[in-house]
Length: 196
Image (cartoon, rainbow, N blue to C red; front, top):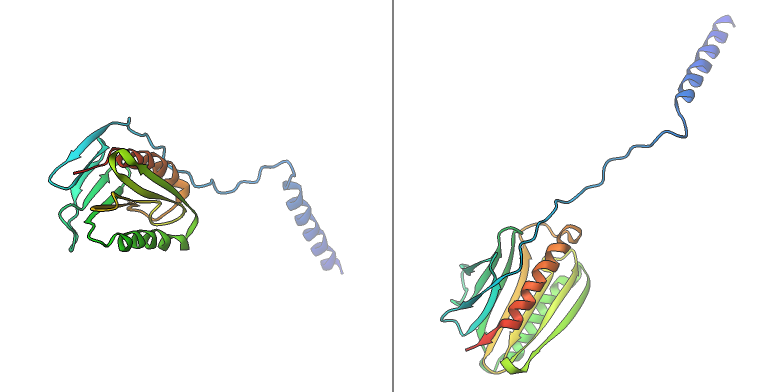
């Protein structure tokens, strides 16, 4: 019995000691939330692209223009590369030969493929009658591979399609500010496009 009393005193003292260390005023520490790097954006400035291709446009001076080197790429397919943001706008051009409906359907299909992970899709209509530039911008919200796509046409001869991709796993929480920045460049490209 004496031994039993010693055990009861020992466990009672241990419980009392442990409970006295816990206070309701103590802060509860949890892991620090994941942060994102600060991004310094360059000042907006543009330069004209004009070559043997049947179109011209203005693109950002902080971007690099490269010919598309993929197998099957036409000579007037270009990549506008943003090295600082690890992003690329892929531009493809096709001549319209009574097949505009096919190109339009393909553009809508490419944009709609991203709706599996998208949280929304806004369409911005492009109407520049003076330059005969018409089209649609697909602003795709959510963690999608491509957040921004567009097509431009004159409805009779020219068709251009563009898509913005980042060389990273889609995470709109960290990329949205960059998407918004590049979206202004895409809109400038669209508003400065001219057919030849």
